[in-house]
Structures are given as C-alpha cells and as structure tokens.
Amino acid sequence: SEQGIATYASASWTGGLLGGRFTFEAGAAAGVTPEALESAMKAAFADFQKTPLDPADVERARNGILQAARLGNEALKDRAGTVSYNADILGDAQSALVDDPRVKTASAADVEATVKRLLKPEDASVLVLRPGPRGGYPDALIGSSGTPQPFTAPERVAIDIPKHPVGQ
Image (cartoon, rainbow, N blue to C red; front, side, top):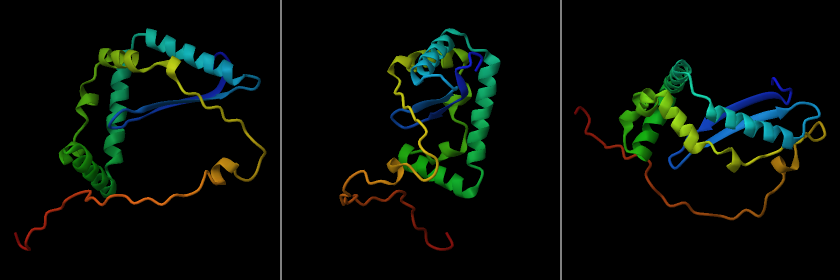
C-alpha cells in the first residue's frame, strides 16, 4: 500500500438469499500490528464511503460482473446447476439464463446508496491469522471439533421433473 501498512489486499462479495458477506483480506507488512492494519482498513472504508463513484468505474464493474456470470454458466453442467437452483430456490428457472436486472440497471447513485446503507466497518468481524511453524497442518484443520452426532434430513424432491409419454 501507499502507506506501507499492507503487502496485499483483496475484497469479494458472496451473495445469499437472506443476505451476503463482504470479505476484505489484507496482509500486514513487516512490523505492522493487526490493530494498526484493522484501523487503516476501517479508515480506508470510511474514505471510500465519502468519495463519489465514477460512473465509468461502475460500468466497468457491471460489465465484469455480467461477463463473469455468463462465463460461469457457459459449461452445460454449470448451466444446468444454475437453472435447477433458480427453479427450486427462486421459483424462476428462466432467470438463470438472463442478466440479473439489478446489476444491469444499477446506477452509480444506486451503488453509493447501497454502500452507505450496508458497509458498516464498525460492525466488522476481524480474524487474525498468525503463521505457525512450517510443515504439517494446523490442528484446527485436522483435529476433532467434538463428538459426531447422527442426524436425519427430511426427504424432499429438489426438482419435480414431469414424465411425458414417449413421442409427445
């Protein structure tokens, strides 16, 4: 970074039906404490919220999002998975084959309003990972987290595919 606080930074959004998760990840430069990195991150988000978005940047982001969605559904198996998900969960199989209208029509003002409404750095959860000794896997990845308990999931049909007589 320009301030020499981070060696890298990345951000991503994972959407969901009831909400989503915005994830920001950064690696602290040598000698920078997690607290200093977190403080700088929150200050950068506050600055971002105050800065008007350039409509050209929004258009570039829109094109990237729409292209990624199209490419992600290009392979037949992936397309079939998206169609079945949209049919089962959203009740609209056709929506898997068209651009998301919310992305297609969002203006810079819409994005700014959403950022101001949802991006709350003061509510962020922070996870600090410190490297351990080299070699092997950390116990958190291979150790038991408790005693397994059996469960039974209720049966349900994910998609009801109607059967048609042959030749019709």
